[in-house]
Length: 226
Ligand SMILES: NC(=O)c1ccc[n+]([C@@H]2O[C@H](COP(=O)([O-])OP(=O)(O)OC[C@H]3O[C@@H](n4cnc5c(N)ncnc54)[C@H](OP(=O)(O)O)[C@@H]3O)[C@@H](O)[C@H]2O)c1
Image 1 (cartoon, rainbow, N blue to C red):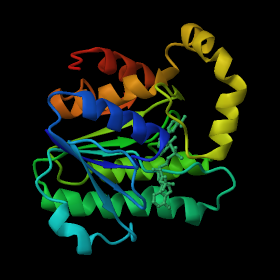
Image 2: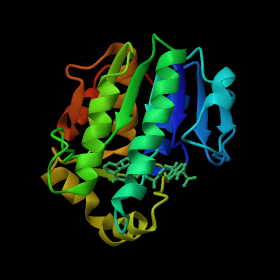
Image 3: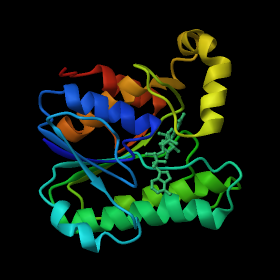
C-alpha cells in the first residue's frame, strides 16, 4: 500500500506515521505538511507545501496512492468560525478534491472527533464544521471514505501534541490516563490504536464508514500486521 499522510507533525499524524513505518504492507508514505517531520526512514518521503487551498502545483507528486490518512487539524479553542472552517473544511476539501481526481482507487481516512454533528445545524461550532467536512468527503468519488471520531487520545511512544493547550492538559492529567482508560475504555484510545485502525480501514475496510471511539479501538486491535 502507498499512503499519503497529512498532519504528520501532529499528535495523531505522528501516531499514524509510526504505525505506517512499522507495517510491512505499507510500502511507502508521503508526508505532506507546511514543514518537514524531521524524521528519516527509507519508506518516508516529504512534501513541504505552502498553500493548502491550492494543490495544482503539487499534482505531479499526488498521484499513484492507495490511501490518504488526513490528520491535519486545529483545536477550535479561541478561534472564530471563519478561521476554524478555513483550516478544517477548506484545507481538507481542497486536498481531498485533488486526491479524488488524481487517485480514483484511493481510500480516504479522515480524523474528526467524538461529538461531530452530522446534521451541520447544532449549536457547537466545531462539531458543525467537522460534520459538514465529513458529509462532503462522503460525496467525493473515492473508492471508500472513513470518518474516524476519536474521543480522548492517549499519546504513546513519546508522541506529543502540537497544540499547547492539549500538551498542558496531558501533562496535568497524564498520570491518571491509564486509570481513565481502564474505567472509560469506550471513550479513550491511543495514538497506536488509532493509527493501526486507520491503516486497517485502508487495507481491509471497516464495518462502518463512520467510526466512533469504541469502533476505532476494536478495528485497531483486529488484523494487526506489525
Ligand atoms: N488530540 C486529541 O485528543 C484529538 C481528539 C479527537 C480528535 N482530534 C482531531 O485530530 C486531528 C489532529 O489533531 P492533533 O491532536 O494531532 O493536532 P496537533 O497535534 O495540533 O497537530 C495538528 C497537525 O495539523 C497541522 N496543521 C495545523 N494547522 C495547520 C495549518 N494552518 N496549515 C498546515 N498544517 C496545519 C499541524 O502542522 P504543524 O506541525 O506545522 O503545526 C500538525 O501536523 C484534528 O482534526 C483534531 O480535531 C484530536
